[in-house]
Image 1 (cartoon, helix red, strand yellow):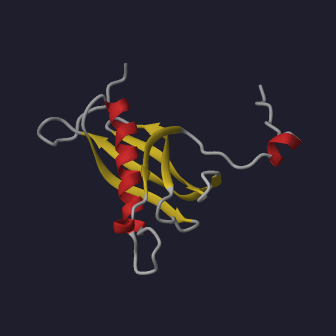
Image 2: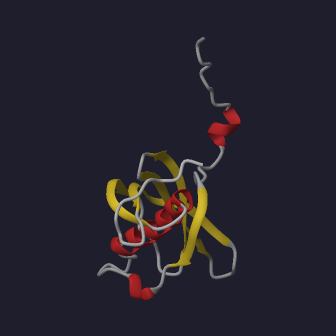
Image 3: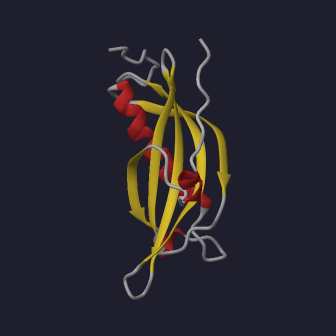
Length: 144
């Protein structure tokens, strides 16, 4: 039996892009987290993504996890100081002990009058975690 092809409707094409996955972490970008250009340092964003991915992976593993790889990472636009930074996660695969998590980071800057500014996707990446036991050794991810 052939699987039907999904088609996008005109209204779906016209909609603004939206985050994929579940909101796992939200914080505010602070002045101490800037690079020499005054934008938020990429390493700070990477650490937020690692925290968010760890939260998602720990739910699946039902316990401790450790980051073992970042398969892919791309930065799209800089993050401004004061922006609300939101990390969205989606578990894309689970192996015997590993958990692969897709992470998107979105940024929202509020205007000086309190209105909501643009909501932009600033980076995304695929992180791999492994379930670990109390001694830091790899363990199987529970199946039920």
